[in-house]
Length: 119
Ligand code: FES
Image 1: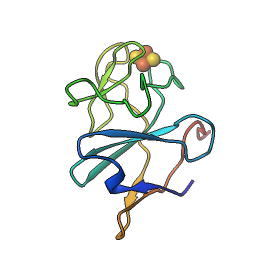
Image 2: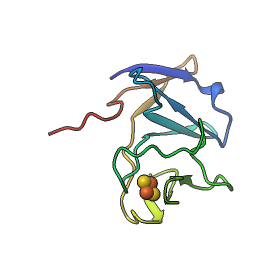
Image 3: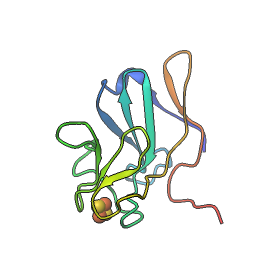
């Protein structure tokens, strides 16, 4: 699925934001911004696949904002790799969502959106 999710300036540096590109009624992907780098992942924890991770809208980071956090059971994930570094799914990874930053600043999702899994 290709979809423009937002403008890069819609995500403050160092923060996260969720999106619902498939109009499912809940955010199925999220982005963490670190400067000009954007990290996109499915909003689905590998501990219990399909489990949404934020405790409230757009809250995908730990309190110190150094990790992505799943607020269901406290797993912590490396922001750049999506790999779980602490918690019940240690060593497993979030599913990346490929993104492209267009010249006008729009953030384009260029890959699968959410629940679809390849056979
Ligand atoms: S569902 Fe994410 S840590 Fe358990």
